[in-house]
Image (tube, rainbow, N blue to C red):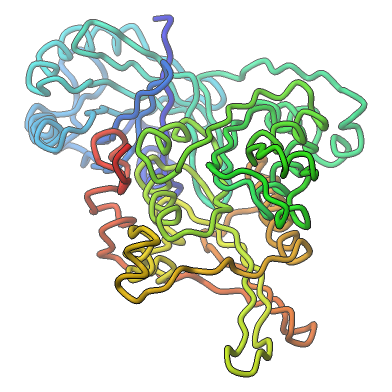
Length: 462
């Protein structure tokens, strides 16, 4: 097998699998995973949605050929569920290895015997197997057209991001002098991991332009920049790198960001998308990213971003700043910067009422429709670069620490809200976001969670 695939787990489901496979008895155990499927840019990604643990002796018993095997009843129950739900069936077992794992000859022979029949039952969906070591994973994925894929890498998405491979990969550990001071913090391997990361930034205005520069100077190697606006004179006080010439020439914000990134890192690979993120064709451009930054302030952008995180299991963060004042007196009531991480099943913007259905409906109307229906035409919100910098800096710090696994993951996710009019000890407000067990967007029983390409994103036409 020469072609590769990736696989993504939430931290909760990965831990559930590992606790079952490695309970401390040094024996072999089994399970079945059901996964969504994402295919883009010649990249196939499996998105683990369901974990079904095989009970010893009942579902995972002594094999007729190999040591142990999943029982026909257990297999049939789950391959038919995979077929009905349009999910990928993945049989799982473990070996006693650590950093390197591979299928045995007996394993491959069992795949040859069983998977042609499973493909017929699956009716067009792939089937396959995973074998786990303690810190490694390998795959053998069969497609109806005869293609077989093994594993490039597995990503476990929690607060921190863990990456596993079938065996340790050699990494290019060049040591450009540019990054010498930060290599002293997280090492050459950490710098190589950052260089290999593909980041999506949605919105390249006041906050997004700061995020782009910070990431470029960290050495992030790949960017997808999405914004459909051009630079205006009123933007010059807060968009990094923007000039009067850009404003007069109606240069796009993504082009300014691209220029800023290349000034910091001329080896960066940059995809620019000058279009509305709410369009499905545009949203699909970011689903192969490793991390997402939402720096656009529309409800529709929040809606689509939130769906992408849970549907494709991609870690992300929603950023913003807000100035609230009394309309009658003009007195400023609150000055706030926000850093809100969103992970698969956690920090959902719907659960935390950060997507306003009324504003969502207003955004869908044209200016003429708003006037006719007495909505009025919205004025731009206040924006100050120093407030934006608080959000951007904290979000990029979190990306650095979590993507490189530089801090422990206790499983708890927090929003950060900075209320700058409060006295210093109370300015930083830590909020544990709500989590609705029945949420139709983020719960792992929802129509969206881990479905990948099999679910529709909540996008507009185009």
